[in-house]
Length: 71
Image 1 (cartoon, rainbow, N blue to C red):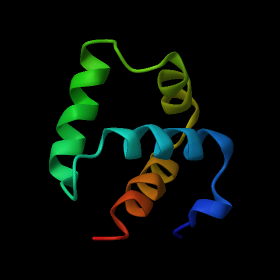
Image 2 (image 1 turned 90 degrees about the horizontal axis):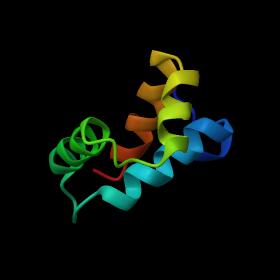
Image 3 (image 1 turned 60 degrees about the vertical axis):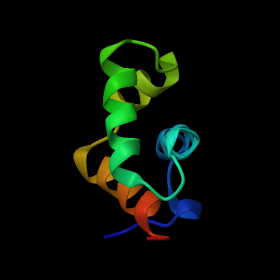
């Protein structure tokens, strides 16, 4: 079940906000590459790592779905 931005928990909203800050103009694939790079290079904010550790796969999927909703 998809959750809209207003229904997301704090960790989901924080992750969504961080991902939105990385997204190049309408290019979600580049966003995912940037996100993966920031995680592997350990340059993402510590809150991102904490949120990822606390979210279930379904919650992360909801974040990604919300991020791609405009497309």
